[in-house]
Length: 129
Image (cartoon, rainbow, N blue to C red):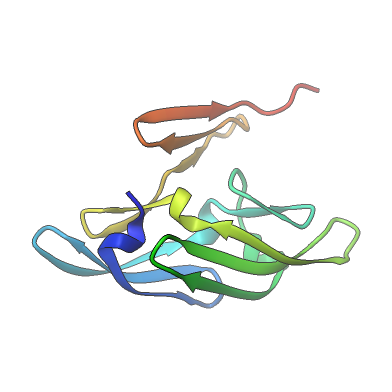
């Protein structure tokens, strides 16, 4: 379920902290999620298997619609140039868990990552050397 369907007042603080009022447990709760914890920048493109995207991002904002919440930013590439406006549907990676915002992307120290897609846990192994 898309978190925005059970959340209101969705916005960004400091360009990387998602905040919302989320329904859960019979009431509404102020919730935050630091997008830097699971979202990075890989050569100018959002990467949900790394961290700290905001360190190399400019003009960061979100667009909230009934269907999704989209993160928008210009991201630095490895050569230092700026990759113009990139979009990421946060609704695919964030859920309202009983009034708390939670990422459904998990990374391991080995470089593997997993994403919970409905009831399916999809594991992504790092490329072989």
